[in-house]
Image 1 (cartoon, one colour):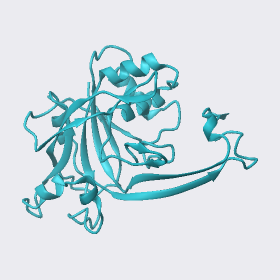
Image 2 (cartoon, rainbow, N blue to C red):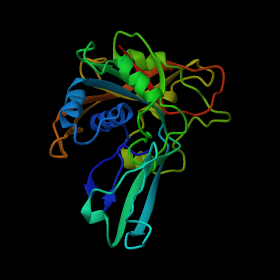
Image 3 (cartoon, rainbow, N blue to C red):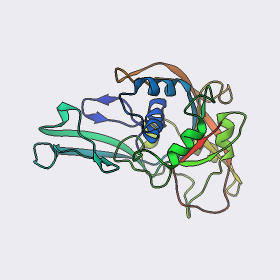
Image 4 (tube, helix red, strand yellow):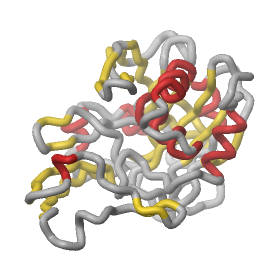
Length: 272
């Protein structure tokens, strides 16, 4: 998966968490919105509120990519949706050889809790849940090559806040999982901190709950957090530029450890 980040020339980074414009694009794609429907996308962005839990940070991967668009079979189009070929609309990406670097998070796992302002307005939270289960187009996490390994929707839950909703979703351990998930990789240096691992150091090996790293907005969880961030993660959908500035809290959330070991998954929670 990739959560997008600052794009410098042909180098595309990934952040450590899901951000608002990415979720709007994900839901918009599931519903069937087109990029030209800027009013719908902008309104969905105004309504969406979310919190993120990091179950596994994953491993940072760098992908060096080259492609020669002058090959005869490439200008005709790429992805197909319901049998219809989606043409490349960017003229700069139709010819010549392109070189770029892209960064991804491999073997990462997150839980995202979502709610909507004006809950009776369409699309409702039920509409979003249905769209994730029966998407209008193929879904991906951040970039088109990041196809999910399983359906993104998990369940609709009732909770006092998004932070509380994150805590209601059990943490699913993997077989023979090491508790120090970042051992031997550079994510600590890249992301500067690992609150989940630090919190786990104070828990017993057989504790039935796990403290996990989490992010939430003011009003969607505790007002006291370990770290406060100023983030820019919204999009001006008409002009296709990143805009906005908002406060984001970073801390931890405690989740029950599931007794059964289930397959790894990237889970999406919806809350009405």
